[in-house]
Amino acid sequence: MSDLFIPLSLLAFLAIGTGASVTLVLSGYAVYVTLWLVTLVIESSYRVIHHSVK
Image (cartoon, rainbow, N blue to C red; front, top):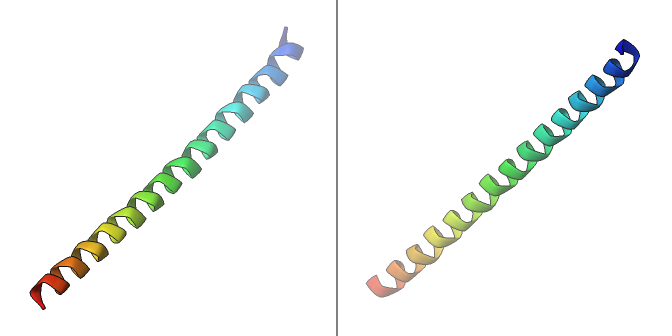
């Protein structure tokens, strides 16, 4: 029983670790994309306002 338990817990630990790192990478990527989009929108709206003022 204990011989089987150790590899299983190790596999579970690896799976959890991999899942956590993948989630971290994906959430970081999502934050990066969101910031990029926000910057793009702010820049374009700023240009539109700037042009309409002129």
